[in-house]
Image 1 (spheres, rainbow, N blue to C red):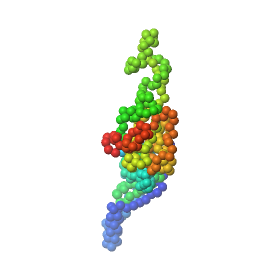
Image 2: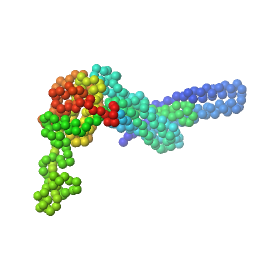
Image 3: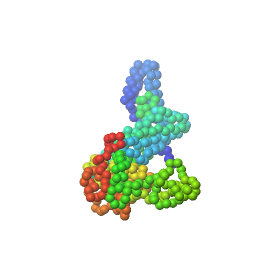
Image 4: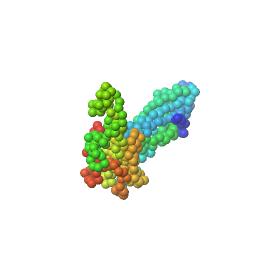
Length: 382
């Protein structure tokens, strides 16, 4: 369970309105002392009381706040990183009114292009875009609000601290408390929209698979007979066991053992590509992973030298949402290498290799491939 964090630091900063308020209060004090006017003394006392209420009393209520920040660990480029804040008011009497929540500057781990220094990587997101407001939190009560951070580029976003601040009640003093609750979010690449027919035709090419029907796990399953069951409306007529149905005097349908799904490697042709082409290749691979998930195909990834430390990215083909997620997570943090692979892909006998490239020469002589430049993002544009 999440443990609410305590404030690690508080601060008071006067606003422009507050500076004018203090200046006016000083003028009232000077006038009251010089003129010995009781009305001016009363006005000066009210001004000081306003400062105390705005700065001390309402600031003390923020010190009784505990907070939890939850971040959706996955997002897609072009979407949003979902952030939620849950605040608990531990004060026995004082409410918290007009509480605003903002993020502190955070570290981002983007994906630099070949030959580009790490600090030149695109910003994954701007945490300062997150903003939320809670109108009021009663004593011994809690409230939850949500914020969204636009995901600008693939990579990892590390959120550090966030602030809860208030200008209540007069706006003359900005009271803030800071909470230290580290969180991370991984922004996956936006997938390209690749037609299913294109994917199936690529799987049909070359050796390893005999037909697109074998590459895709259909409803019927494999071709090994397993048993019989009663006919259900919607079953294909070709699956009816006519002889057994005649003996049983009721329609019976053949049941087949499910065929083991095909093993497909996605080999990314990143060396020699421009930064724009590299991003297209990675987005095309993300689109192929989505198609593989729809057809329940074992999918793997091979990107030599594409880790941040220069090592190879190798994820063996596997089936299931966890396996597909691992491939998408790896695509999110790929660093395009500047040199070709030093050793071949570790594909086994019968494995299918699909080359993802950007240009006619990317897959020449290497087997069937997908040209990322021929496909666009869903809803148009990148």
